Length: 152
Image (cartoon, rainbow, N blue to C red; front, side, top):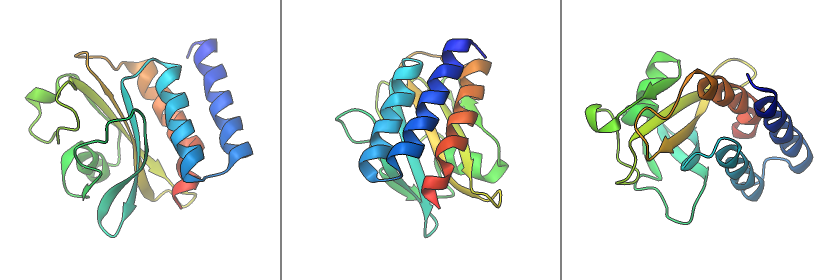
């Protein structure tokens, strides 16, 4: 991973430690993640009563699905597999729940608590096809690890 990306992860980790896990600070963390690699949209979802519930997201426009069953969407697929999911063209994946009509690609990374149970998802969307590569996946896995304790 590039040194600049590692520095941004350090900044995110430091911010989480200093500011805690309030709704306002989670929104700021989501914005830091979005800005770190110039993503279009970031969302932090928590699993609550068999649903994914958005805790924080970037931008002013709310997603079409602020809550949905854990069996649906790419988040549901990531929960089922326990692994990150990267989709280069969401229009070709029938699991995709349209958040915004301009989304072309998406990455979903499970967030785990200290007992390794999945407690939520870190979601990024891009208006470009095939926008997410290996460095993005590594970045998201580490960022998810830095904020997962906020979902406990």
